[in-house]
Length: 268
View 1 (spheres, helix red, strand yellow):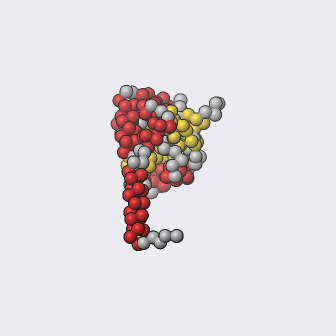
View 2 (cartoon, rainbow, N blue to C red):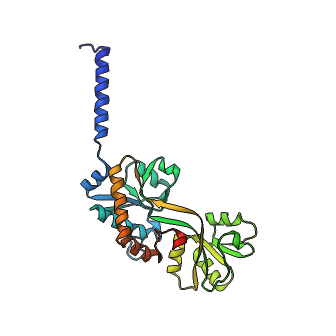
View 3 (tube, rainbow, N blue to C red):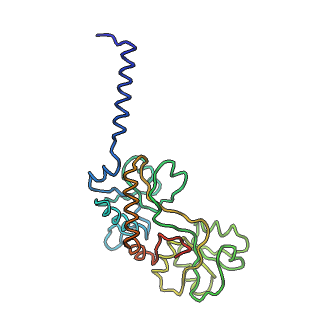
């Protein structure tokens, strides 16, 4: 066998490196992959109403984010292909390339932006009060509820925030229906939940209640995907821009929440 000199090894190593860089530089952008495949692979929990869940009558996947995914896929000229998975592993699955995007109320945070790229926000949310329709008192924040009774879901982050404000009589409940009933009957003075869920709860309730003030930090919800796909990012944001402008996003938003969830909570 002929011997390989150090010089030859260096040339081989250089050739391998150049080849690797060339392959990487011509790696397909996610947009090319999606277009060639003809489908956009979308992950969601499928157990998170009204955002994404299975219809109890048909067992079909439905919800706000299912409708939004269909609108986006149509703008991209492809068909949505849905995968349901538990929240605990959904981001890891995106990292592993099991799907292209996630639509599951994924908040845009600095830590997540280190790992993934995000679309522009498609929903904006914050804490929001629920009050009776005839309420005349000016409840605008947690501090304004000192000396009053506030109802909210047991074990939620809102419970922790409310209990951190001295003077609020915090009442916890197993679910929204229970505290909404107590609010309507006057046993509590206000209730608290995420502004998106407030819209959904009130849209599907016949109780004499209305949305109160929104307050606190605004959470921006976007669509994460793997880094290094500038063409896909541009196409995704273009699709979102188009459905926001043509009214189709607003129609879906009102269908599920009775309001436009792309607007800042205070402006709704």
